[in-house]
Length: 517
Image (cartoon, rainbow, N blue to C red):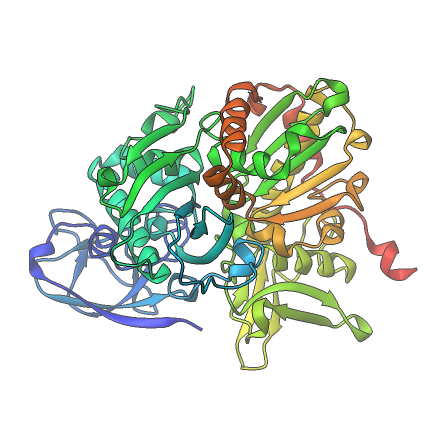
C-alpha cells in the first residue's frame, strides 16, 4: 500500500532538519501538521547513521520501537546516513481526473494551426492544467499533479507558518510549483515551436501569492490582510513559461480566493433568480451565497477553517481522491459494509466522500453514537488483500470539527443575509470531494441540513471550469472582476451566533430510525 525508498543523507547536511533536507531535494512525503511533530505521517526508519534533537548535534534522537523518527523533529548528523522513507501512494499516484473535473469529450486531433490557451488551477492538494482551443472554445487535454508543497503541511496556514519561520521556504515552494507546472506542460505535448497565447491562473489567495513570489505571511495573523486581491497580468517570461501572457484571476479576501470567484463565474450563481449557494469543500470550507435577483443579487462569502479531513489528510486511513481511494460506502445484506473505489481499483485508503459515507453507515449500524463516541476505540474493516481500513476516535473527532465548522458557516451566512434554509433553491458543491459526495450521506452526518435534500448539484472543479471560461470569454473575465469587487466577506469569528452553531452541530443526527423502519 506504500512505496518505500532508501534516501542517502550526506555528512554536509549536518545541522539541517531532516524534513527540510528532504524538501530541498524534492523528495515528497506527507507533513499534514506542517512540521509540528503531531501527525506522525513524516516518519522515516533509520537504516544507518545518527540523527539529533538539536542543530548542534549534541542530543541524539532515539528512534521509537519500530526504529522510526519523525523527520520534522530531528536534525542530520555529521556522518553519512541512510533512511527508509515510506511514501504514501497519494504522493506518487496520479489524482483521479474524475475527482478534479467533469470528464471531457476526448483529445483534439486536428492538424490545423490552433490558437491555444491554458487554464491552471493551483489547489492546496492538487494542480490541474487544461489546454484549450481558443477558436473552438473546446478543451483539448487536461493533466494533473499533486501539489509538491504538501511537504510543508496539508493546509495553507501550515505553509504560511513555514514561510514566516524561513523566508527561503517561499522561494523553494515557488520553484517546486513552477517545476511541476513545467512537467504538466510537457505532458500536454505542446508543439515545440508554439507558445500558448495566454494562461489564466486560479487558486486560493495563499497559493496565488506563492505563485507570484509574494509573501503570504500577512494572511497568517489577524487582521489576515493579503498583499493583493486584484487581477494581475504578467508575461510568460516572468515565470519562464512558454506562454505569451499570464493572467492571475482576482480574489475577494485572504480566505476567499480566485478559485471561488472562478466557481461563481462558471456556475452562474450571481445571475440566478432564486437564492443559491456555492460550497467548496477542500482544506477550507468556502461558501458563497447569492440572495437571488429577486432580492437584489447580493453576494456574501465566508470561509470555515475545516482542516484537511475532507481531502483525506489527518485521517488514519485517509488518502486523496486518487485511483483506489474508497469514494463510496454503503450497507449491503444484513447491514454489511460495502466499498466502492475510484476507477474500481483495490482499496488503498479512504478519501473525503468515502469518509462521509463510512461515518453515515456506522451511525446507522450504531457503531458510532450521536455524540461521536466510538466505544470500541477503533473500527477496523478488513480488506481482501489482508490490509485494513481503520477509523479511530480521533478520526471521528477531526471529522466532527470539520463538518461542524462548515455547517455552522452555512447557517450563519444564510442568517446574516436575512434568509432561511428553506429559501435556498440550489446548492452547488464544488471541489474534488463534491464530485463523489452523496448528498444523502452529507445530510445523515449533519454536514448539510435536511432542507437541502434534492437541491444539491455537484459541479466538480468549478474553479478550473471558470478559469477556462475566462480564457475565451471577455464578459466572464469582466464578471470575475465584478464579483471580486462586490462580494462581501463575512468574518465568522465576529458573528455572535457562530460559536453556538458550531457547538450545536458537533453532534451527529439521530438516523437510527431510518434503518429500523
